[in-house]
Image (cartoon, rainbow, N blue to C red; front, top):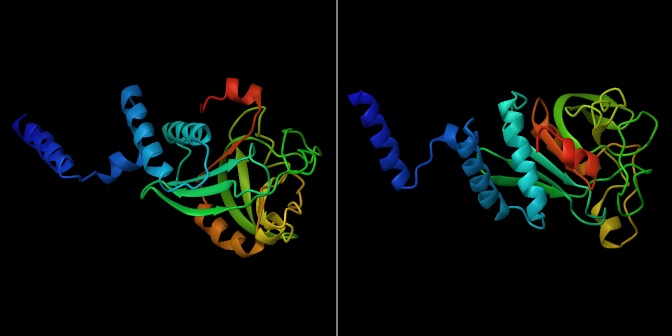
Length: 231
């Protein structure tokens, strides 16, 4: 008992001087109060690092990440956020290092050609829809295909994005996704549902997020928002 009390005193003393135990900072406590505290802390730390991100989307993304940790889906402490409520001319993809609370990438990303024009307004889980899917994804392995270096995605939400793997919804580079098109307001090209990125950034982004990290793709989809087990 005395050793345990000494341990608690040491933790408190280190915390007083600003030291944060890595495991406490990187992962939420499984108790509700601890999880809420962890989420609030992460939002505050990431907000200062995430230019242009919407407060609501960041809160939902961190909440989804915390629940993905609880369910054992997180093998790498990286969170990718895609905000499809923003138009495609804005940098609406962020990659966060959740261990160090840093933004690693912030760039443009495409949506499916049948999800909308500059704005994405419709989402689907169906094969052949050529629409983007929303929800929580787990990244898988890489491969080289017709779109070059690509990353397989596994949808974790039943009826929302769980057909992503069979639909071949993957992250890849595409020449129609680049800053010049966005800055000239000519509009980004659209994919067949894949979150395509600038070809120059595809490999570094994919290598950062591959192998069981979490992607949170937000869109104004009432059915998903009201039913997701991650939110």
